[in-house]
Image 1 (spheres, helix red, strand yellow):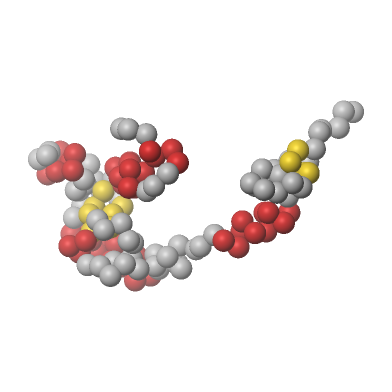
Image 2: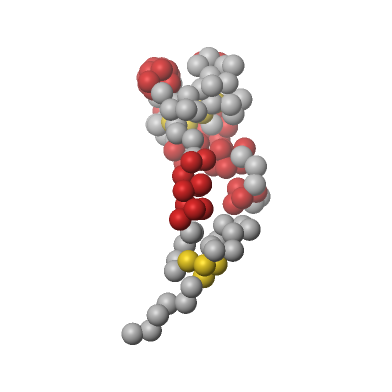
Length: 123
């Protein structure tokens, strides 16, 4: 049976040879740097704010849907922070800073707003 060739760890600057994927040290480091949603402010308080906002604003409020009559708009399932700072921002739970959106519209908006990566393409 043929053995699979070893490869260099894909983490930039790591010369360790591995059978596949990242080496154990890089996997361990990567796991430590990931921040939980709760640490970012998406906790029980946010869940209550989000649910109340979606009850009051059941239809998508994105720029494209705003042009449609209310009954032709799709139902919103997510809440966007207009300032992009999330629930820990100074206006994180201020309804004037919130915007109801569909999943697809919120993802598209976030991709345009976030720097770098796949989302820099012109849409």
